[in-house]
Every structure is written in C-alpha cells, then in structure tokens.
Amino acid sequence: MKSSCTCSLVPEHVLEKLSADTSLPPRVRLACTETVKADRGFRKVRTAQKDATFAGTVTLAVTPTILVYDERHSQTLPGAPIPSPTVSDDATAKRCALETAAVASFYQAVFGRNSVDDHGATLASSIHYGNSYNNAMWNGHQMIYGDGDGQIFLDFTASNDVIGHELTHGVTQHTAGLIYSGESGALNESISDCFGSMFRQWQANQTSATADWLIGASIMGPAAVAKGYTCLRDMASPGATHCLSPQPGDYAHYVPGGDVHTNSGIPNRAFCLAAKACGGNSWTKVGKVWYGALTSPKATPGMGFKKFAALTVAIAKSLYPMDGTVQAAVVSAWNTTRVLP
Ligand SMILES: [Zn+2]
Image 1 (cartoon, rainbow, N blue to C red):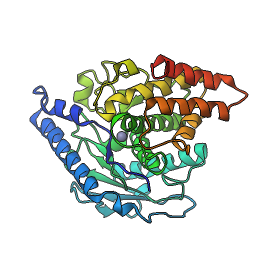
Image 2 (image 1 turned 90 degrees about the vertical axis):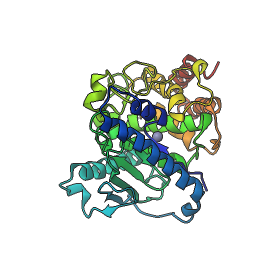
Image 3 (image 1 turned 45 degrees about the vertical axis):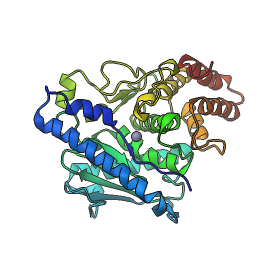
C-alpha cells in the first residue's frame, strides 16, 4: 500500500498573497480565501481517512474508463455523473473527458502504463467544484477542478498540462509513493509538472527546444496577465518574474521548510536542462529516465533530491548503455542545479 496525498496545483501561500492584494476586486480576493479554506478541509479529510479507503481498488481494464462528474458548484464529491462527457454541451466536461483520455493514451503509448495503477483504474474527475474555486486537485482517489475566479485563474481544465499534472499525482501514489512534504514532497510536485509538461509537448509534437516549459499558461486570467504573469510556474526559468508562483532554480537556494510547490522548481529545472541537452522530444529519452526512476524498486517514499538524482543517473546508463550523451545530459543538469556535486 502506497501513501496517497491531497495534492493541489496552486500553493496556499500564492492564494493567501492574492487574497491580501487590495488591487484585486473583492470577489476575486474572496475566491482565493475560500479556496484556501476548502484546500485545508481536503487535507483534514485525507488525514482522517488515513488511506483506509484505498484497500482493494485494483481493477483490470484494457484501457481506463473515464468518468466526469458535475459538482454544479457544490463541494460534495463526486457530484452528478455526466452520461457522455466527450459529447457534452458543457465545454469543461468535454475537455476534461477528452484530455484525461489523452493523458491516459500518453502514458500507454510512451511508457506502456495502463492508468494510474497500471491495471486500468477508472479515472474520475469532478468539475465545477465550489464557487470560483481557484485550484485543481488529486485527492488520493480522483481529480477535482475549479472554474477559477475568471480574473486571476480561468477554468482549471483549460491547461492540458494541469490535467496531466493532476493525473500524474495518481501515478506517483501508485509507484514511488513520495511523501507530500519536504524534499520528497517537492519531488512529488516536480514529477507532476514534468509529466504534465511532457504531455503538453507530446500533444503539440514539440521538441524540448521549441516547448515553452510553462505550467498553467492557459489558466491565467486577465487580471493575472495584466500584472505580468504568463504562467503559474516556468520549468526553464523557475524564478522568473512572469511566474505567479516563483521558485528557486538550484539546490543552493532550497527553502528549508518551504512549500512543496516552491522547492519543486529545482528538479523541474534539472529535467528541463537534461531534456534540452539531449535534444529531440523530452519524452523519448529523459522522460523515460525520469519514469524509470519513479517506478524503480529503489525509489522510496521519503526519497530526497540527491537520491532521486543518483537514481536517474544510474537509469540513464542502464537504459542507454551505448548512448553516453543521455547520462552526460542528466549528470550535467543535476550539476547545474547543484543537487549533485
Ligand atoms: Zn500538484
């Protein structure tokens, strides 16, 4: 049994900062305050459940069933089932179903993985969660998407990397089971950004050189754009001023006790650097190395950056014994981010 997490996309400190920003309309600030409250509630529920409900959820399906539920702005999960979401008149429902299926196809085609558990587990999502809820979430069982306040954040299903990010939390839960605090928590968050970004690049058939490496670029609302924010995070440049949630980009600037979404910038940048150094598509070589590390029997729930980095170096060598450029790119990326000496 692996530990599960209540893993959100937007960190609490960013929402708190926005709720205190007097330049924003009261309605937007209230949406941020309410989102923080809802997120804290999720974490309490998870702690109380202690993963008990996870027992016996093994399913065997050739491809995962995709379910979408309509919360109709309530906060009681999962909401009302949407009979045929892929042909729904509700653009959010349709997008959620199609993009979730596309993420499942990405995992199948690139990594030979059948859903989050590799046994075809049903992938459930609840949309229109709460009122102007400013987050997306994996709660240990399913994905949850808010509509956003329309000013700072748009509908959270609008960025396909966000859907890839949330589903990947399920993959991490069923593989390394990275504990959602400290370095392992930051790794957990980073894995979701890496695979979310890879999925976005795979869908657009972009190379590592042509990809923008932004997380949440399509959920930035007009007020966020007016303030100069073009994304939530930038894997290539984690500390850039265009990031709504800026991060450190190397281990010398690791924030002790920092939010998991803060320190994830360090391994995010390492992945981006390695992929760019290898050239071509991120998912063909470096993506497989990262996936190999995540699913390795040597991966442990409490794994820190250095252990994960060493694992990627070893896996690069074992996967590409005749192509030293992959291992060299991975080593160089961890050197540049000062995780490995
Ligand atoms: Zn996350």
